[in-house]
Image: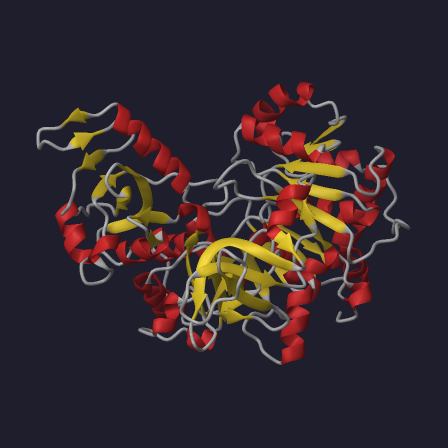
Amino acid sequence: MDDARQWTLVATSAAHARDRADHPAIICQDRRIDYAQLHRMSNRAAHSLRSAGIGHGARVAWLGRESEYYYTIVLACAKVGAVLVPVNWRLTAREADHILRDSGAQLLFFDGEFDPVVAPVQPTLPALRNLVRIDRGDEVGGGLHAWWADAPDTDPDTAVDPEDAVVQIYTSGTTGLPKGAVVPHRSFFTFPAAMRAAGVDWVDWLPEDINLISLPGLGTAGTAWFWQGFNAGLTNVVMRAFVAQEAVRLIRTLGVTTTFAAPAMLRMMLDEREASPEAFASMRKVAYGGEPISTNLLTRCLEVFRCEFVQIYGSTETASVPVCLPPADHRPGSPLLRSAGRVCPGNELRILDGEGRELPAGEIGQICIRTPSRMLGYWNRPEATARTLRDGWLYMGDNGYLDEDGYLYVCDRIDDTIIVAGQNIYPAEIEKELAEHPAVAESAVVGLGDARWGEAVHACVAFRPDRRATPRELMLFLRGRIADYKIPTAYHVMPALPRNPAGKILRRVVRERLESARTVPDTDTAGHRSATTTEAMEGTSR
């Protein structure tokens, strides 16, 4: 559907109900929903939303696990001009309260298991007039079927435009309170249309594909991956929550052909007993992103999955894929594996200094992207929108540089940059090298205040089961891989690193824990400082 006037989920739903009526749209657990059923269910839900007073521009929230019903409600909102606000079910009541309050949601769909989150916040939210329980006992979706039971399944007559908002995705909140990025219908159409127009298939969705939704549809990556697959008319396989063993089983038994996953998810799948080239024989393409991938992990993926791999770089604000490393560049040992890739067709990319001047190849600055899929803006945050979105360009929160061939190398989040004696140090660069150590499962590098140098580089590491390394061993491993001034001055061991509900490591929380530990140190038998927030805090390594 390359007619931009038809770039709406509403038009696509109607077209698939007509042209692909019996084709499975969603598989979830043992339930299969075809495109005709999905269209009728979302029509009933749309009419029920209208009866509840939900109209154009109203915000509707969802607090529940993944299922076909989540996507049904997104479509229902689209069909009445409302905007769906997903609330990640891993959030605390306080975090959920922020999203519900900030969005002004008038209706909330929720799974019964999250009543302890809903009950304390609902009375304090004057805009939240309606609550609809998704489930009925153990029956997934039973409450929804009862809610729309008397509604007609005819198409609502709402006029919908590609520029109309359809979902409001809250940023991961790695540097502060999450902001609601308002995403229009067009965001789910521009990228595949541009790829087709350019005649390239770096990332593609085919009608015959079976697409595993590994990342939750409650975030931009997962929801964009689902809706672009939906627009292609393929079959999306939805898990209630990601479980590596179940993902491997679904790939093997259903013949999954494509998926998009975070590197940590790929590692967990490869660690499963059933993981083998035979189990993944149906796969044709795996996309990954959300965090850096180590060379060792990528080599394992290429050896076991034996299909094409593509890296994606984007953000909540881009709402789609502005940069990717194509499959042809995924060659073991290639230096390009350290890059995020090239700008995709239909997008533009530049690197700017602090004065807004474009920088030449090799110089580090702020990554800026112009993409047709970009968000409309942040909900009720005009100043934040103006800082991020300028003259059609998205000012990303990342530092990076372009090489002579136009490949983008992402250094780090701007807010995470460490400055030691005037030298900029980018944590992700150090973390990528630490990930190559056989004992290190994951790491987070942060800067802590230092009286002499301004900041000092500290590394928090979580080890693999039954593997350990001393600070000296880690220091010697890094020596020669990165400049000496970048090597951490201290190493801290944690059983696991803190992550947000989207799975991203929270350096901010790591930094806060280490700063807090500084104020209450004691001394262990080796003379090193220890802290209650870490399993062990070990002294300087050089």
